[in-house]
Each structure stands twice: as structure tokens, then as C-alpha cells.
Image (cartoon, rainbow, N blue to C red; front, side):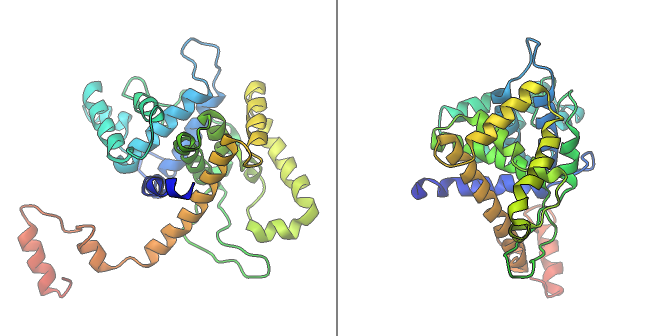
Length: 310
């Protein structure tokens, strides 16, 4: 299994960075927006002919995240507002999708590419006419604990990610990895979105807090989880509970895809903190081409040289 995971890591890392991509029109990060709109889509009535089921929602949300990996918060809605036609906007979105999606195997790759949204048919991964449950906003405000270990002080890492950002990322990772694990992406996606419902009311104190709560942990967490589940339509609630039960262990393809997504996001989040801490000016000017080629490049390089910055 280990030999098959590395090709995914660069892609997963870029999607994880959507926790840190923001825009003036969004309340939080792009990942947070994906979380809220995914729950809004799932919670919308499904009786109409155009209603999307969980698999559809998973594919649309993941396709949206793949486009956003390089385009950031520039989505179909932004491109339409900027004057592009539906065909032109789709070309831009697909260019972003194709730039990062090569590690994903067929037939999942084709399904995801077909789910890329265009203006006039927005994907639930970014937009929905429905209303997200109240716990979605609470999870967007609830920060994750950071690095904790029983018997040691907490290591505070700034800025903290929210539970909404983590859950949205795990959900998308799970869909992408479902092809590798030969899993059904729908329950993996829903479990990813829902696996921290209890933290809508229970502040996260990490592994240390769980150990200190001891035998009371499941009772307390269960009470908060039930409160969040009560906000869902009955059918969705039952589906969510079944998905969470399926992914309680790693004995099924769905369980393996979910737990792989969860642990990879937790560790890639720490890798991002390491990457930020080690970032140098040489990397900015060299690897990242901060002062990139253009008509003013020669003058800009001369200014930096005279200032001793190059």
C-alpha cells in the first residue's frame, strides 16, 4: 500500500492549502466554504428531478476542490461575474482541474472531470441554494487543538485550522483516495464531513483532553454529536450515522479510505507548519520566482541587487 500513496501527496497537500486560501467574498477560507455548501447541498430536499444524492454531492465538491487547488477562490461564479461565457469559464476551470488531477485513476478521474461546474450550473462544493445546518457555522468557528500529548504542555500552532476546514479536507481526500482503495466515495465523503460533529459544541483539547476525560469522553461527545445530528433531515441523519458506523474501523475499503484521508490530513497540516517555519528568501526569489519575468524584471532585479536583497 505504501508504494501507492506517494503520488497522491503533492495533490493532497495543495488541496489542504485551501484551508489557508481566502477571498473578500467569503466568510472564511475556501475549505470552510466547501464545508458549508456541501452540508447545504446534502440537507436540501431531494425529491425533485434535479436533486443531487450524496455521491453526486461528493463528486461535485471534490471536483470544485480540485479546480481550486491552483485557481484558489476563482470559481465559476467569479468568472461569470468577470464576463466570461459558460464555455470560457469551463475552459479555465478544467485547466485548473487538469493541472493537478493526474494521480487520480480512472474511472473516478472521468467522473470528477464531468462534475466540474460551469456558471448557471454551480457545484454544491461551492454554491447551493439550500441552507447549511447550524453546526456547520459552529464547526467553522471551532479551532482544532494543535499538537497535544498526555503529560506534556500543548504546542500552539498559529493560525489554527477549524474543524470545518479539517472535515472538508478529509472528505475530499477520501473521495480522491477511494479510487486507490476501491471504495464507494459517497460514504467516505459523508463520514469525512461528519466525523467531528461533536466538536460543534465540544471544544477540542486534543488527545490530552480525551485522556483526561477518560470514561466520560463518549458520554460527553455522544451528547454533542446527537445534538448536531438532530439538525439533519431524518433520512440524511440515518445515512450519516450509517457512514460513521462503517468507518469506525479500517476493515472495509470505505473505512480504509476514510482513515487514510484523516491521518494524511493531520500529518500534512503539521508538514505545512514545518514548511512555513523553514521558508527562506532564497526560496521565494528562486524556487517561487517571486520577481517573475516581465518587462520590468531587469529594473526590479537591479533594485534588489542594490538593496542587497539578491
